[in-house]
Length: 97
Image 1 (cartoon, rainbow, N blue to C red):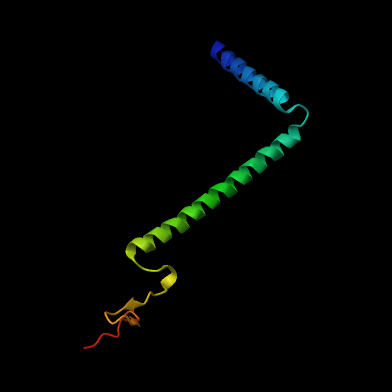
Image 2 (cartoon, rainbow, N blue to C red; image 1 turned 90 degrees about the vertical axis):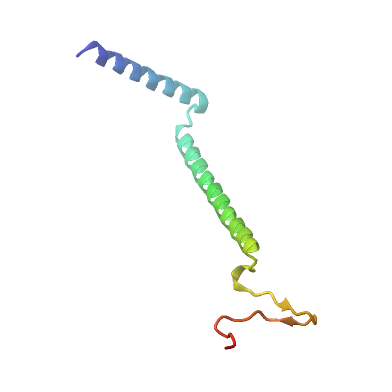
């Protein structure tokens, strides 16, 4: 084997040893708990990200409908006439010829 192989093997073993020492100092004998905590943290982060994306979609939909001028979910807003009487907006396909 060449010297370069020994060097890379030595560097890798030092990195593994440092990671194990760091984990031992941080978590002690609770190695199994560490993996459960990491999984719970990732699951919680996923739920938070999903909630933020959903809230963003709802907000975007609300703003888009307000800018267009339509009420959300297809409900129509009565239009008032000059006499003050509300009338329903014209339905498509019911135009007078």
